[in-house]
Length: 399
Ligand code: HGY
Ligand code: MN
Ligand code: MN
Ligand code: MN
Image 1 (cartoon, protein in one colour):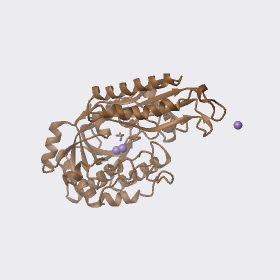
Image 2 (cartoon, protein in one colour):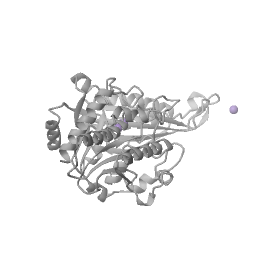
Image 3 (spheres, protein in one colour):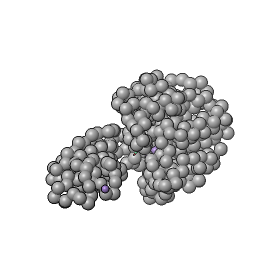
Image 4 (cartoon, helix red, strand yellow):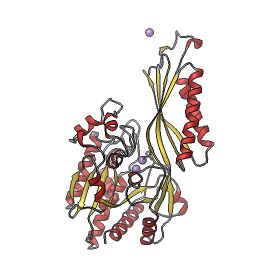
């Protein structure tokens, strides 16, 4: 079955009528429905599906075993995200299995498709939550305390999904199963458009992290409180949005974004008592990323003091830059006939796994160059070119 046809089958699941696009989040009803759909598609192909203790799905072609060739991605989205970021890598893996079977290929090594939960951190705030749990990149006790905007903890969400919260955490047995990991993904920039190529290989991922800035002031009446008497935490928060742009502009190649801000209690006629603001910062390396965040944190402290407010800055997640395994990359470039290799600013489970085993990524051209928004796109023909390239790569690695 084609990747495009498989994507079509889930195109109605998790549409967000308010934001547009899709809202599919880790262990919510929608993501669980998508996981059930994947399980059915895998079973239809005779793949044996299991769920590991951190909620990652594995679909095995043949007997499960160590040192396997593993491919996959995620089915969750950002709030109001596109149809391709995540699902394309999952459906391309299923389509690649179909192609390999049509070619009469039989793997000479265990081969599996994985679906990682909550890659975007759209519900619990930490990106690549499933792969971070598997690799021990996040403390399981801290992870279980994470809560979504409704106050549901990760521990409760896991229980809802039928998983045992007491068993989450670093899973060396699962890691030993992955000999090599290849993730196919829609490109999230304009690299392949400019190069006129449908498919490419990832070279690197920026260092990136998320920080929560909590500004505390004094809640009061919007009409009755004189300007001189206010300690309004929205003012330093607003200043930090501007400071983030200035700080990133001063460090070549860096990016800083404020995409989420919550005034508490959140009434039009209420001076907030607290404002929570989340900063996403990325740069070529650790030093540059830290420099941008230090600059923004200093601005936050100064702006807060001026308004008689307090601010705390908490790192919620971080990942250093990733340079994908050069030997594997050159090997796959050879298999694919010298496709372009390009850097990306987006994070991926393949980037988290890269600290533990050889990983690689295939990118499929995105004609809009837009991602994390409903305009994200990939043409059917490019999706099939991606699935075919993935099939070639899997056949080579599992020969
Ligand atoms: O890059 C990101 O924000 C996420 O990991 N997809
Ligand atoms: Mn994403
Ligand atoms: Mn993704
Ligand atoms: Mn009143």
